[in-house]
Structure formats: C-alpha cells, structure tokens
Length: 97
Length: 209
Image 1 (spheres, one colour):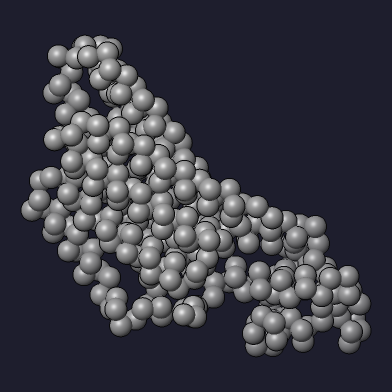
Image 2: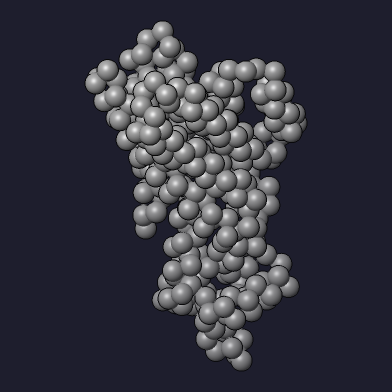
C-alpha cells in the first residue's frame, strides 16, 4: 500500500531541497535539479533558496553567473540529520510532518 | 507480607523505568513539534507527559504513604493515588488516539469521522466506572491505529510502536484479571515495561545516523 502525503510542511520542502543538494555531493546542485527533486514552482524555489542561504544551511557559488550551484553547509548537514531522525520518529507514530 | 512488599517494590521499579522512557519520548516529541510545528506531535508529547506524570505520581504516592502510614492506614490514600493514576492514563491514551489517528488521505473512507471516535470514547468514559476497562477500550483504538500505520508504512519504527502499544494493552488486560490472580499484577507491570522498552528501541534506532 503506497503512502500518499496530504501536504508538505514548509520544513519538509526545505528538507527535500537540501536532500536534492546532498545527493549531488561535491558537484553541488543547480536550481533546475533542486526544482525537479523538490517538486516546486520557480517562484517558490527562489523564495526557499533565499531562505536557506539566509539561514546558512546552503551556500551559493557563482551567484552572478547562469551556472549557480548550491552546496550544503555543515549547519545544513546537521539540520538534515536531525530532520531525518524526527521524520522517522513521527512516521513511527503515523504522524506526517 | 514480606513477599507482597517485595512485589510492590519491584512493581515501583518497573513503573519508574517506564516513566523515564515515557519522559524521553515526551522530550523527543516536543523537539519534533518545535522543529515542524505539527500539532499532533504536541498532542503526542502531552500524552506521554501525562502518562509519565501519572507513573511518577503513583510511585512517589505509594512510597510516601506506605512509609508514612504503614500498610493499614494507607488503603484510602492508595485508592486515591490509584484512581488518579488510572485517570491520567486514560487521558494520555485519549491523546494518543487523537495524535496517531490516520490522516484522511490514507484511509479517507474508513475514518471519515475521527471526532466521532473521540466522542464515543468520552461517552464510554462518562458511563463506565471501571478505569481498567476504559483504558483497554481506548488502547484498542490506539493499537488499531498503530496497525493501520504499520500496514501503510511497513517501517521497523512503526513496528516497534505497534509492539509497544500492543504490550501496553496486554498489560491492562492482565491487570484487569489481577484481582482473581495476584501473580498477574507483576506480570502486567513487566509487560508494560516491555512495551515501553520497545518504544525505547524505536527511539534509539530512529536517532541513529
């Protein structure tokens, strides 16, 4: 039986974006990859990327060029680890986050 | 008499350990709530907090009144402590029913009216005086919800929670029979401890990288 999600909280969207960046490893992820992986509209992507950068969870390389790439910071990696723990805990009780 | 007091002491030890595990789950659920803002995590946290408060209240109350008044004088007070403990558990279990209910997208048809379930539980509470029976009824709903969640996710974490709630239910069933067979009393407390241990294993495994 597949599990459908009713909605994604903002925290989950941010975590999905960060997971997409983490998957790309040392090469970093561009906006398009993040957009598809996190299933977001362009406007929301821009808004959330700004927020992640502001909170120092990701860093942006070559911000002025067309080849913008994003990397997780150490703080971002810590956040993602903590989110995964909380995700497991919540799902154990059947609570969507 | 010595043997009975020994059983009580062992029972209180089991209860204390279970209470500590319940507090750990409270802490983790609160942390999760602060990060995500998901209201159900707050309900879950409150449920485990009420449960642990009831457990510690019973341990402290039993120890205090036995040492203060001795066996004979403590009967009334112990009864009050037991009733307060039973009530706190029922409140906690109702919070578990609310917090672990399936989301509508999972079982939209089956659980159209969750508030109806909660109201039914409250009605049961008002008409039935046996706290153990009420606790069993509420926990049956919690266990069923845990079964549905496990069937939906098939995750080992959900399995630990299901086992935990099932053992809690079993401990109440054993407790209901303790009046006719006193040995079931300690068995019930042991089963409860096993239930909380299952949840502790879930907490440890979920916390691993």
